[in-house]
Image (tube, rainbow, N blue to C red):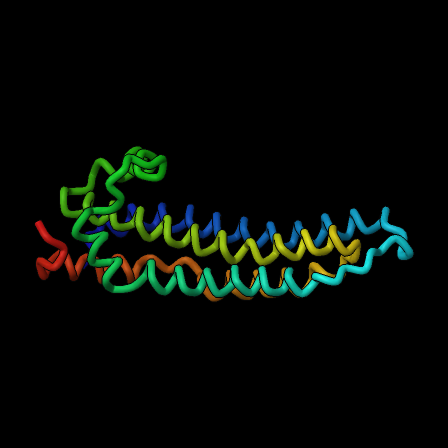
Length: 189
């Protein structure tokens, strides 16, 4: 199980991850506002007929499917076990540097520091998944600009926000699984 110092450390990190999640949801809403503001300058008779508008729906669907497939792969038991074995990403990423400087990191023992490395994998996986999902809303904004019809952004935004709600940040169960893998020795030495 996770130590008290690790739980306290994860609490701070999880709040930061939640803020990123909320910011990406807000971005989808902002895309709608941008489209509405731009639409004030579009005359209805200036709307071009776009014969390839369906491509935007295909593009958004591909982003949604990519987010679901990536999420399934990144949060799989095999990837979690690999993160436990490696102790997180092998490169010194900005996330790793920030986490090593975060409050409470110095109080962690070696086992917990290794689990903190696993958290970097989870954090990166969440952010990449959310980026795919937020891209759905961005495709809607592009379609609204190309078609000069602000109503086109609504469906894409609803889909993006719905996808984002399906992947709320919940790293604690994954971290507990990683701790069990480490205790059983499946994470390697």
